[in-house]
Length: 116
Image: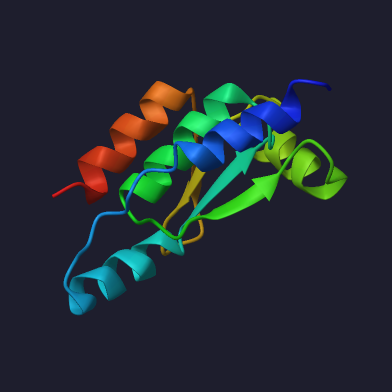
């Protein structure tokens, strides 16, 4: 895709500053982020939008390539029911997972859980 590199450059150039939290609070946030995973395509504009919000909120959430990694793609389809990105996998302590689609809903969830 010809436009892909330009989209990635734009993402880099417009990278937001991260939220600064006290170290103890950031450690709690980092711990909570371990139960989250973002399934995404690198040049998807909606995925870029979510990744920018991850940076803005200083969230260390694992980003999984569902475009080129067949294992991640299969996990997304099996768990969420469809191959559509972005998708946030939210796991709880018992191992149960919710699959949240749509960039706006993902951002709303992240802000509700992690924004000051």
